[in-house]
View: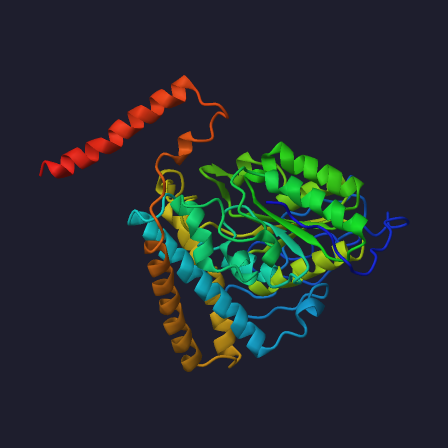
Length: 413
């Protein structure tokens, strides 16, 4: 399936003369403990700048649900209304409910695999709601919340994981590309697409999602190089959930991930990935830079994968309960609920109605998956070689005998 990059929009400003603006906004103040200041980051060259003891972190909403000021990013959420806040909360709750249902369906044998987003709802909903309709998204295989923001029906995400299709939606209908299983390759796709829309004269932007583990892939480094050199209107959104399957972040990098952007010549920002308001604000800023012709940005959403990498993974083998408990206290949904309640922006009636809507969504997803056809167990053999192969024929026969053995066992009962 091809992706249509043509656009008829106002011309993009030339990159000429912008050498001094591409890095005009680096990561802002704050720390990983939840306190945030408003002092602007030092502007001296990185080679001579004094190193801070903690990585910078943008945070607008503390884990306790308290709103904190940030001089650089407050303007990007200044117009948000109580209705908007309730909408963000609804998005996160329904996305989590869908994710929980999909996990349960895999455990019941209805799906072959599932990659949970549990704990990463704020990063995905905040960044997803920052997008315009004409922006284009290149996801990995875990961006269920972003898909929700792009109006992709949740049930369409499940066909691939059941093995009955290669992706259940038209990318051009929602400007949301098909899920990418190959780690890191979607950043190259996003960079090329962004270069294309720049040549078309469009003022839209592109966003590419990837994880901390993918940041070690060569494809990502190549994407950074091309996007910087060609001033591509792309935002690289890295969800640093602390674990690349069983490898912790400290085995991926010796510096905070957002600082890698400096070596490629464009800004990097670390945002509290469990703070939906901060993710919304930072992504809006990065997308506006892209649309204005100021080139790429790396956003590192500092978050946590509360569940397993996929349903084939056992996280208890490589991380302790105390780590999960510490991050549960920073839960993105609970954080926003505390703020809504403290600000009198939502009452018990709202939460009760949302709970009922959540259960209805779970029921709809469950019924839709069980109505899907069973996967073709032999399709895996069909496209290995164009003209067939003796070894594949032998393997197909062995697999057919294996499948038949189950029927024989049931018939003998």
